[in-house]
Image (cartoon, rainbow, N blue to C red):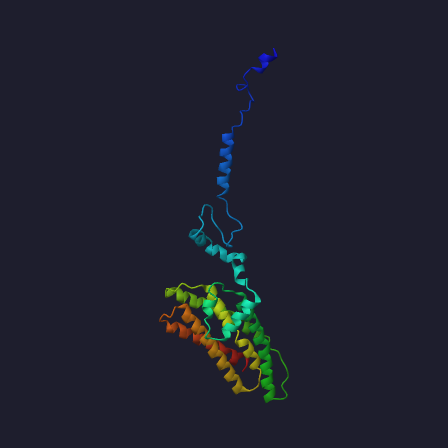
Amino acid sequence: MEEGYTSLPASHLLGSVPAVIAEDKTTSVASEAASSANLHLFPPSNGGYRAPGTPSGADEQTTSSWQGVFSISSYSSYFNVDTDVVVERIISSVYPMNDFYRKIDGNPDLYGPIWISATLMFMLAALGNVGTYVMEKRNDSSTTWTFDVNYVEWSACAIFGYVLAVPAAFYFLLQYFGFRTSLVRLWCMWGYSLFIFMPICMLLVVPVELFRWIIIILAGTASSWFIAMNLKACTQSSDLMILIVGAMVLQFALALFIKMFFFP
């Protein structure tokens, strides 16, 4: 009797569960792996965004180029510099004959330009007030000390506006003339070119007008020559003298603006 019950087939009964086939299990696992491969990659290695199914390589770079602009991790590599590198680049910016543009080819940074621009902004605001007071005190002994807070606003707009807008304008001009360059490299170059005005600000406090003009002319000439030499290296010695001369004029105009506005 017990043998009869055990020999009955159970596949036709209601509620019966078919046996699990190993082959079906393997197929389902493979399909899950294939579907998971189409998910977004987060966080992306380059700080950008990669759409589902986008192959790695050139297409990934094209897709993530604009999305990476709004990602903080995209800019982390431009601040990955140590003190020795920044000091070396500062020293190179003081000597216009050095090929600064090729030195930053592999690793342009934004730490140095931002630090130099912010420091120069506060130095112009503070020392500009001191220089104006010393000059007025020399001419009129009854002059009292006053701090013009507008110097902070003007120095911030002048320095940061210049170091952001001018390299961006030359970037688009170089692109128009067929030169493939990096905007970050131009920002880096123009940012370090402002370092020479930091020690000059301390010398401009001296209440001797002739000495002030000599100092600012020398600083403007050195800074303009630095920009010209590196733009020439950027354009690979092509005949773009109008572009190079224009950059020199703008750099020298900044030096004159510093003298005439902050140290009148």
